[in-house]
Length: 130
Image 1 (tube, rainbow, N blue to C red):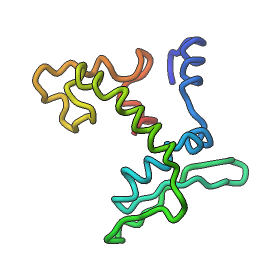
Image 2: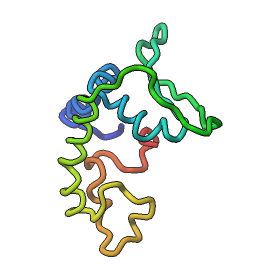
Image 3: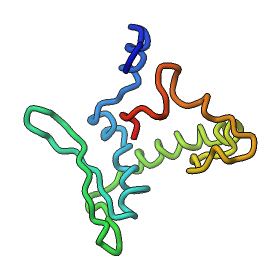
Image 4: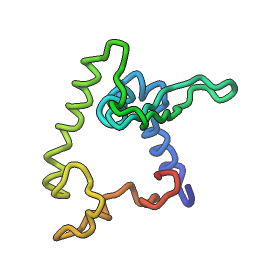
């Protein structure tokens, strides 16, 4: 990232989460369960020698039923993720008129959303974000 002050760098690092944290907090389970598995996709952690823990996507889109977890799922992770969404849903509706960002959001009446994306040092077009 270009032109970031030391304070911006510190803030950016604080917002980054390790893969281990992401998994421990249940976000990986819920991402897989709610979005990826019904589409036949799976994201899992693997320990890569010299790299540490990495996320690896798997493609089972040829499976007509998608995927299910074999192991017991964490109800706590489900509740925590639902609470995160519920806590932001009304704010997003009030501010943006949507909870889940529509693909063509800029065509919505009263479009004023671009100013809310990321902080001043980043744009929605950063290659890292795709």
